[in-house]
Length: 221
Image (cartoon, rainbow, N blue to C red; front, side, top):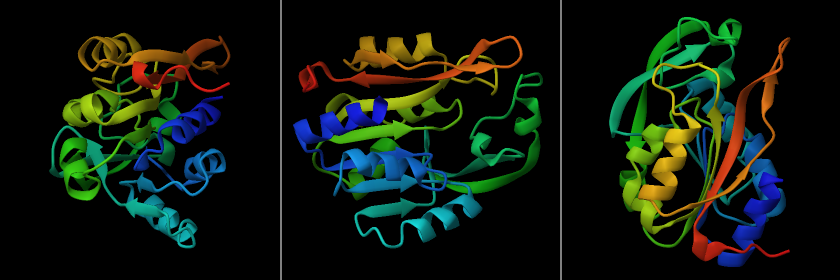
């Protein structure tokens, strides 16, 4: 259980904050706070309509701070793709053929505010350890490239969705991400969660993965 594990890490190290990157309407924020009650949470959502719903849903949670922005590999305004399935919105363009092409069909392209994790952390949360959750539709490597200093020095755990089948142009692969996280940034691969399968053939479409700093292990029983 990934949220249970995040709660274990939270209780063990008492981080400065949890970052929910790609928070959509905030249902993952709710789950994280079930396991880490009282935690300070920064919730990021670049889609304007989703960010408005997120702000409304979190309006009675003073410990949750909503940021209408993307975290990626650069700071400034950037293109963001809106799709039929709003949870597939991404910094990355879609591939031409995908088993998810019905929900990935483009509706519009908008300009959104983006920051690197390193720039954001220095400005908004400059001290203490961080726990990161990301659901950013193939752009995981952009997040890490823009946050190498923060990942190396301050991130205790990184839980993220990883696409397996093609969905986005230049999407991060598990092998690429694992090499960066383990070999470059000093994390240990903690878990690979059950894959979501594509009907009708049952091929693995995407999965969730967690990397943890070795200094945090072992987690409490």
